[in-house]
Length: 124
Image 1 (cartoon, helix red, strand yellow):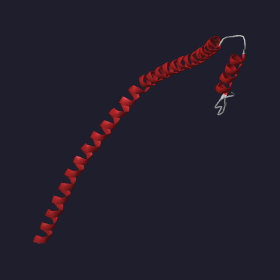
Image 2: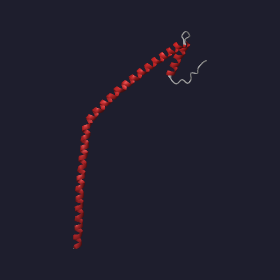
Image 3: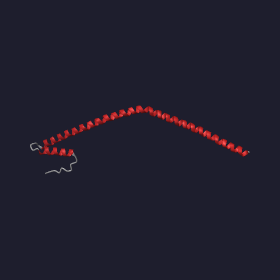
Image 4: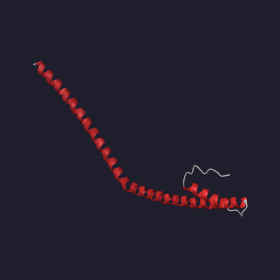
């Protein structure tokens, strides 16, 4: 009885199917030995893949550590400058508020003087 090997999704499927076919076609071993050999090969392949994944994770961790270091350096470098800019912004806001208060007081004086001038002109 021949099994249908479709659908083959990727290279790993082809590789695993080839290994299974080779092991199962060997005639002098018992079925238990064939299955054991197949499992052993699959175990070794999985270990290789896990090693690759672990290597990739290690590289990512190194890169994350470098990025964190860079971020801390930037924060230290720019932190004082940002604080100085914020202080300047606050000082400008306070100066604008003082000028608005003075302007409002002057506008009130002008309004009072205009009323006085009208009263004086109207009395003549």
